[in-house]
Length: 329
Image (cartoon, rainbow, N blue to C red; front, top):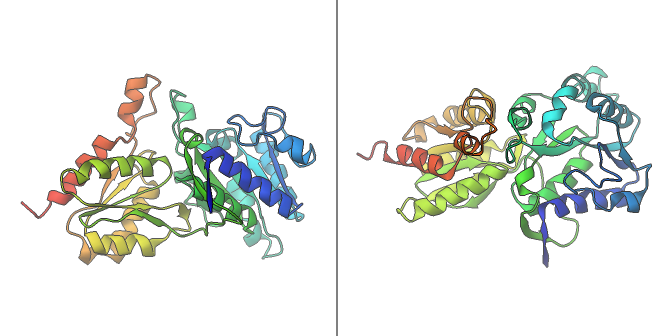
C-alpha cells in the first residue's frame, strides 16, 4: 500500500519516525520550533517532542552547527536545519574541518552521526546571495555524504537513511519541490544511499540529473519523444557516494549523455560525472558529453533574466539534439 503526501510532509514523517524510534535524535535550527520551520517542514514537531528535542536557535549557523558536531561526538544524532543551504557558508569550516574529519583525526575513536539539511539552489527571485547550488562545494569533501532527492518517496527514504548513518550526511532539498505530491510506501521506507534510479528508460541518449532538475529532464524527454528521440533519464539521488555503475551502464547502452544540474558550469557534480563516463565508457561514446547548467554569472533578481540563467527544458532539448545528431549526418 502507498499514500500520497507532499515532499515537505515526507521529510517530516522521516524525522518524526526516526525521533520516535531513537531518543538520541533531535532537531535544531532557526525557527524549527515555534514558527514550525521556514517552509513548515517541522510543523507540529515541537508539540510532539518538546523543547529538549526540537530546539530553536539564534541566527548563528556556525554556532549551532558546532554544537551539533559536539553532540554527535558524545553519542547523540542531531539533525541540523539550515534555513537555506546558502547560510551554511557561514558554517563551512565546521562541516569541512570538524564534521568531515572527526573520524579520521580521532583515529576512529569518534563517529559523527549527524544530518545537515535545508533548501538548496534557486527558488523564485531570492537573489544572487540566496540562489547557490551548494552541493558542488560539499560533494568534493571526503568524510561526508551528500544526497539530493527529486521525488517524494526518496525525500522520506533518503532522510531516514541519512539519520541512521554513522557519518555526517548533507540532505539537499529544493524549495520549489516542497509542495510536490507523490506516493510513499507504507511502513519503514528507507532509500539506500549511493544508488541512482532510472526513472525513464530510453535508447538514444542518457540524461543524468538530480533534485528539481530531474523534473526538467523528464519534461524535455517528453517533448523529445514527440520527435522520435528516446531519452533515458537517470536520477542520481546520491551525489556522494556516486552510483557510477548505473551511470556507466546507461552510457554504454545509449552511447550519448547530457548532464543537467543547477549551479555554475566550472567543475562540480556534472564535471565529475563526465570524468567517470569518459574514463569508464569512452569506447562506447558516439558524441562528447554535454552539460546543461546555470549560466556562469551571479543569479539575477529580474524574473525573466533569472529564468534565462537557469536550466530549462528548451536548453536540454537543444543539447540532446546536438549529441543525437553527432555521427548521424
